Length: 545
Image 1 (cartoon, rainbow, N blue to C red):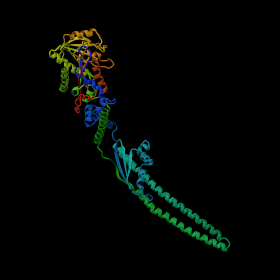
Image 2: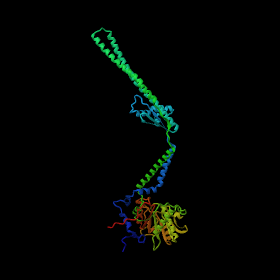
Image 3: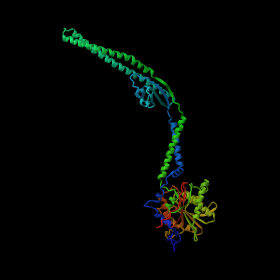
Image 4: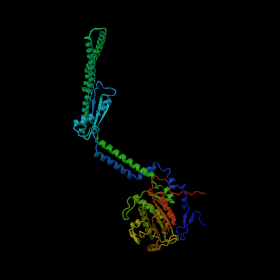
């Protein structure tokens, strides 16, 4: 009686005869058309998730921070900050100034184009008055104090600019105060002249009436005109007194406003540390670059559809992740030292796991396929370590590299297509490399479901396997080429996935291709797992009906 937990694959050749029923049940794990990756991604965003992303991409954000630092320093050297000089003026208010608005009025006057033009003329500059006005700042702390702060490329020029603006402002203000006094006196004199003309007119009328014959009407009119003349004389006297008082009082006040307004603090350079400014600019550039880099890393991590967790990979692939290791850099040459001890240790761990995944065989050759999903170089290094370990145990090993550019065969020294025996690290093994244009070469196992694609390459591999103990195949699967030929090379497959390199759809597609070929998908290896990943990488138990 058949085991209810297994499904027999009808190939008639004993290849992949049994597939765990739970692997096929993976297709029923989605809910409402949503992939398991979406469900498992819920709640992943947290401090640990962001910290892990920053650790993975530390080279990016640290580079951007360094670029920000260098740019800030470069801009400082190319366009150093301007020197600043300041001077303070003490003003005496004129007789016609309002104490409530004097501060704003004097500030606007100091910022006027007229003052800027006078100061620019005094300095002998050729730039526009509007542009020069932008090089200094006017503040009015009180109604009697004006502070002028000038900026320039050199310290001497900053002092000269501040002094010139102060001198131009005091001169311009003195002229304005005197102009106001003159306008008031002109207005008063005009009133005196008008009153004098009115009195002269009345006196002329009195003279004319006095020359006429006396009559009651004439006497009454003379009396009225003489009364008007007295009034006009009094008004004229008052106006003349007002002019005199204005000349004395307001004139003195005007003179005091002109002479009493002076420079309180001579123009002097404002002390500042240019090294301090350089450090501040560099720190600002460093922070901006760091914020930009961290922002890019966090946003990319949030919107990425690449899988990293063990559970996510297991659900997408339809097979448990039985081994996970840290990041591993590829090993380009077999004869080259393996690099850091940590990397060598991870490669050896993967090779040992693949060694345990080699299926037992009571008849014929034991056949294992290693299927990389993304990082071909790291998988090839682990694959080579596996076959060297098997050959070192005295096993007769046939190595088939069916990947483009044959990375494992190149590490073993077999670069050209064909089947040949090679020696590496004191061991001897047979390496088979298919022709580049043969995307789906048939292997020596020849299951019934696979088409009979007999070729010289297939026959040569079959001849080598006839006296071999183990056939180990490195193969990549592409949906456009199909996967039927996989069952002709292996009875069991182990998939190697790199965290953060492939999407749910790609990993799931590789798992389906392995199952469709009739090869048993035994386990998966995950490379580059995060230290914050606490998932087990197991498949969820099927729901009981």
